[in-house]
Image (cartoon, rainbow, N blue to C red; front, side, top):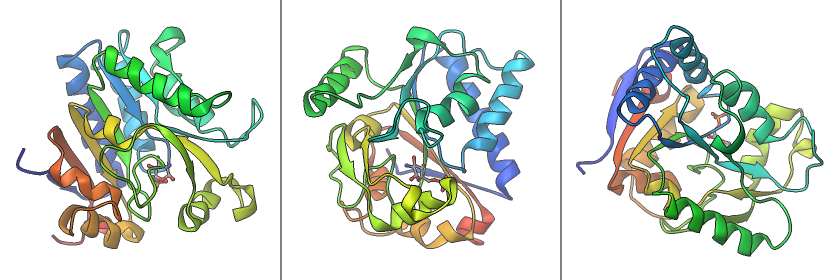
Length: 244
Ligand code: GLP
């Protein structure tokens, strides 16, 4: 308890190194950790640093299991916009995580039932040891768009206009961004035994302060990190935090 530990770093490079140190520490303490990892731009430096740690024998990922955080709905297999594809290229492959050690979100069939089964299976395996998350421009975690309750389960969501605009920068233009997605729930994320939130850049400054210092409520889902029972570390660069 005691609220998130806020670690202010100089810039995006230092954020990557500090984040990788922290994650490598979790892997060392919990070699068979269950981990959920965000896509988005912010954690990419962390993942590259972590892959470097693995190559030099400082991080062992042979027993880690990785869960998918979020995915767009309605994409054909192989679509360039797949968030799973992004995670595979930038996290799973560089860290040598394959096969049964990768747990994907359901994307078809009876989605409501399949999401509930996903949450049950995660709980039966003991829940998450670590969540590596980024901060959406509207305070979302994964695709838990405002309003999201802290117990919200894994589910289908409609993306908000501000999220669609932000995601357009990944894929081209607004019309390229799917409008629906599946996200791991707030309940699953907030129950993780450790949470690392990475925040970088001036455009995140206002939402970072609202999320971490403002009122706690569903209107800014990341604000629930202030009350999470788990160990929450926020690694934020000066551009996003100011001088404190
Ligand atoms: C996206 C993703 C999140 C990500 C966040 C921040 O919409 N759904 O998982 O963490 O927004 O992304 P970025 O790091 O690119 O700012």
